[in-house]
Length: 154
Image 1 (cartoon, helix red, strand yellow):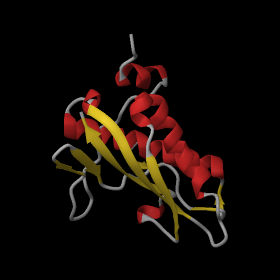
Image 2 (image 1 turned 120 degrees about the horizontal axis):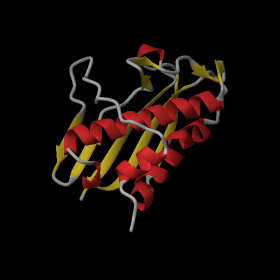
Image 3 (image 1 turned 30 degrees about the vertical axis):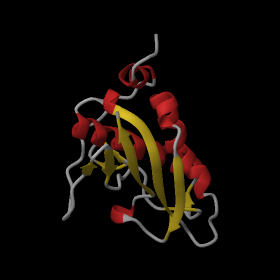
Image 4 (image 1 turned 120 degrees about the vertical axis):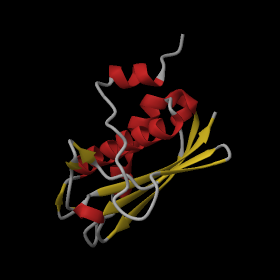
């Protein structure tokens, strides 16, 4: 018997937080037919941004990966709030990862693995996805990483 998403989260020691409310003029998720798009999620941890600053300028790749993993946890919290049950996820189609990067930093793809690896572990085959990893000069609240996701709903 295949483990459920909730069982995989528990085995990883992860408890999903409450889905964060939007802090500006947008909605956290949009459902369109069989698709669910999340707004960008920051690496929130305990009600505050867990990893701040720029990669290549005081933030290590490992810290960036931790930030990306936190973003992925918050993406799942948004999906659960929108769908009611994570088992309603048919497939993670795409992640767009924004990495606050100092000039010359070129390892955004390694930072993005913090989210990709986590979501593939938690969602199983449903978690294999396309992605883009983009370096940007800054992100809201000085977050090191922001990620948005597109899901197919089962």
